[in-house]
Length: 158
Image (cartoon, rainbow, N blue to C red; front, top):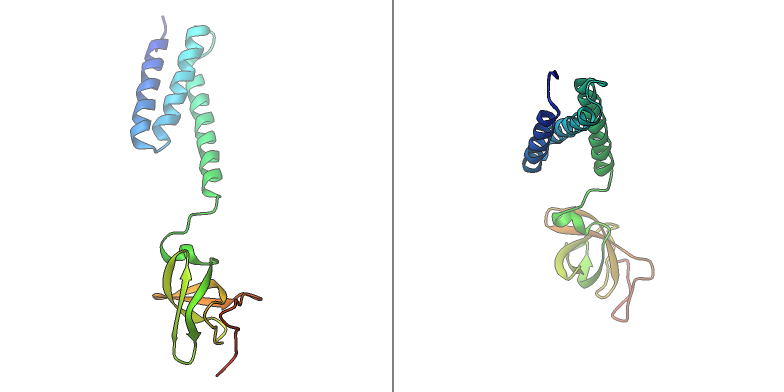
């Protein structure tokens, strides 16, 4: 007589996989996978292989695969949210960015932002800029080489 019948492993495995769908911890899924593998081994090879040994090996394999998946998914670049999403974006100067007065407005991704010059130079309206940093509610921008338009050229005053 078997100590643990194959149907027990099968029911336990399915139950744990259902619990995993609601928790997303990988713990219940790995144990559930191990139980399903033990169920199959016990059904097709009764008495030849210890189902508990197969359960341990199956759970270990599932845990290793979950760990590799976690490392792979966490190594991807994280999404930037909030104002940080604007860093490295290109925009257009709407109102002159003047470091002497601290004034300036840029249009980036369809949004108007207060702006400061990263290089402490005046950037005229219409010129293209890239966002290099964010300080409070102002974007720190640097003019793009050759980024001037018909509206004006960059000049260094100060």
